[in-house]
Each structure stands twice: as structure tokens, then as C-alpha cells.
Length: 280
Image (cartoon, rainbow, N blue to C red; front, side, top):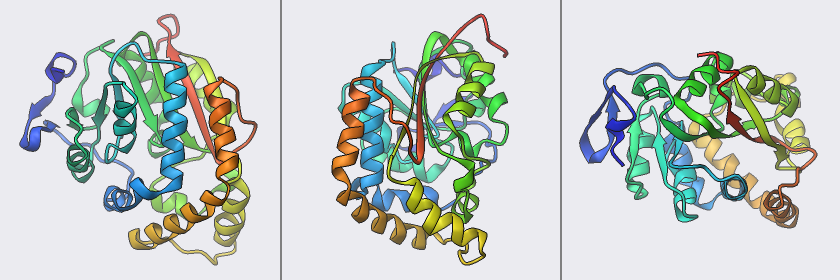
């Protein structure tokens, strides 16, 4: 696709990546994309999240290209591309954008949504996969995004669930908050979106997060992790999650039938932009 048709502040640079002419600060660890790149292809957590996202995109398909905002190393975009959809990575971190190109993704933009300066009502669909919690003013961001989407354009979101599961890992990751389905639905409604589907995923994760992260954090027994420590922990979690593969297969079957999951460690939502409620 011709990226310049939808954005006014991008220049084509090295390795075929589009770069914005300015850079805004983001709340994400500088080594975060490199750490994830080492484990994404073999992590059960990343793989199951991709399967859930693909299932819900298939159930509620976009009307055109899906812009994967904060798309990191392109792991989700590659999964969507392999499932038959065009996905464009929009990632502000240089390392993530370069890794996305290494994965073979043709359309990679190294910029924030705002820095790219996308034209009004030009994006057919957008993905925010564990991104919204990194944005300090999430309501303002969603209103801005609403103005960039075509009328009726869809957004697909995943976010970490439940503020009572807050831990030092959230601080280290650059999170501002965790969500419930009700708080996320209310936020999207106020920002001009109509909810089409809302569910929890990762049914089994809240209790392990509470016991292994939240309570030790509250007691001062758990400290902020380095990128290397986070990699080791995620690898360990992946082995544990594989033991519960049957439960996660059940989750996937429900999503494929547009059925919700009553609890979980993450929220998964599909919403559609509406002209009447837009607050640009």
C-alpha cells in the first residue's frame, strides 16, 4: 500500500520502513521489544493471544487494512497476515520496527499514531494489543483514534485485567492502569465507539498473578525485573500454560462462536466507530 496516501508526516527510510519526522516519548521499556523478540515465537502466552485475536478478527472482520498500533516486533501482524488480512505495523520503537521487517512484514511505520499524522477518517481498522495501558490519557487517545478511523471502522483491543492484580511488573512495563470489561466498555462508549464484542481471556491466570506477583509486590518481596529476568519468567510461564492447553482450547472455541469467557487475566474487545459520538 502507499502509506503516504493515509499519513502526512512520514518519510521512507532504511530497510523500507516509514519514519515520522518527529518522535514522541512513550511509556514502554527501551529493551522491551528486544526481550519479547527472543520469546514470542515459542511463548504459549503470545501464541494463545494471537489465536484469540485471529479468531475474533475472523468473527468481526475489518473492511480493509488493519493498522496494528504499538505493534512491537510484528508478531500479531504476522499472525493476521498469515490468516489472510493485510496488517500494517505502526511501532514507535526503532528496534521493534526493524524486527517487524525481519519477520517479513512489508508495511512497517516507525511512529506513534499522532506523530504519523494520519488523515482524518482514513484508517479502515486498528489494533491495540496490550497498548492502551501504556497511554497516560487513554480517553484522549481513543477520541483522537476515532477521528482517524473511517465511519464504521473497527478497533480490536487487548489489555491487562483487574487493578487488584497490579504489581511491580506493571510498573516495570510502563503501565498506567489495568482494566475491567466494564471500565473499558464505558471508556470506549464515551470515546465514540459502539461495543460489538467484549470478553475476558486467559481464564486461569488471575490466581497465579495474584499469588506470584501482586501479593509479593504488596509485601515488598518482589522487585522490578530486568529484561533478562522477564524473559526467564515468561519462558517458565509458557511451560506452565501448556499444561492447561485444554482450557485455552476451550476459550478459543468459544471466541470462534462469538461466545464470551466470564473471567481472565486480559480483556478482549471489538468496537466500531460512530459519527454521532465522535469527539475529535
